[in-house]
Length: 185
Image (cartoon, rainbow, N blue to C red; front, side, top):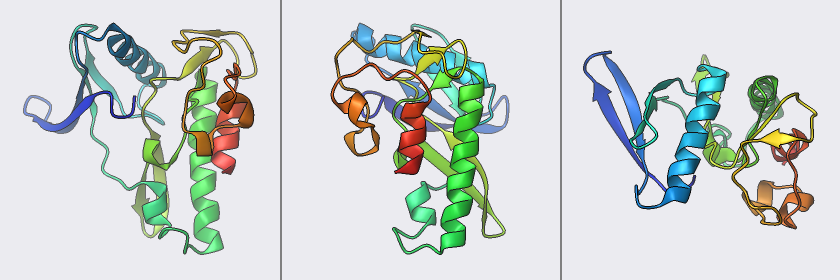
């Protein structure tokens, strides 16, 4: 969803948690549908490897757990990482993406800004994936038929640097290969 929504970090006094509240312009039906889409993806995973969905109403905000972490490029030192650190990070991200695929979710816009990493004892602890606005849902990991896709046919979506050539050209890439490509970049 990128910059198409407002995100606020709030305290939930009832649960004693710090939460993230996402809101979109209610007059924009396309944005509201993408927020519904994101809630659907979060509810499929139940908190691993995504933030836990805490509350959602189709006409209101999406509330999820706040995850304290860093984007992968910050942890790696903007390209100055040791090979072992880079390998641990790629392995953690690949594991998170594999879990998404196990839940029938193809993200289609994986990039460092959509991944948060927590670190314990100098090693990646876990990865949380965010921003499912252009995700698609598949019945099985390698099923080319998808459901719930909000992207018009022939329209390129995603971040070009992390997208496979087929997706950039407006092709219909709706299986895990698109995410695997992004992890490899």
